[in-house]
Length: 186
Image (cartoon, rainbow, N blue to C red):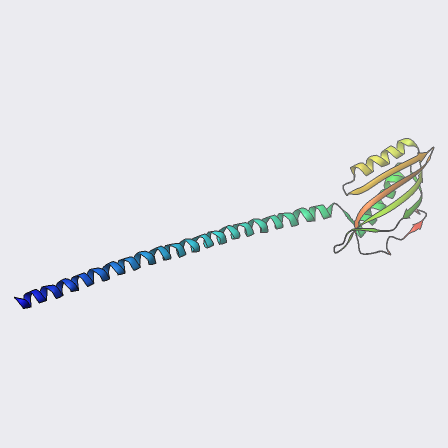
């Protein structure tokens, strides 16, 4: 009987140790689960941030693309060297057809507005002419309806003599090209 009691005590001790080990292991798994759960939630938040950032990047790319389109539209409304020369050729024809006699055209110094490639500059131009009032009105109507952007238009008339001061925005890198002062010759 002593052996049976001893065996029972050993068995009880073994069972108690086993229960303690199971409880310790269960506690370890519980704490490990909480730790893994916290790590998983941090990784999930990081992933959501990446998704939000990638969406933001796509939105920004689209805005840049639309901005580039609108910038090219805006740039197309400003003069460059060739379109300004074409404007003056057309302007001469409009003046001639409306009875405006051009006497002198003077180009002033270019002033940089935006330092880009090519630079956006302002070009003041003074045009002296002789005309009657109705021809001047037709000329101003032409300038008002012109599709390209003219920054400023100032007109002064004394009897039949007039001065038209125009300021153009122009994309140019040429300082020398617009240094002309002389009479308008057909």
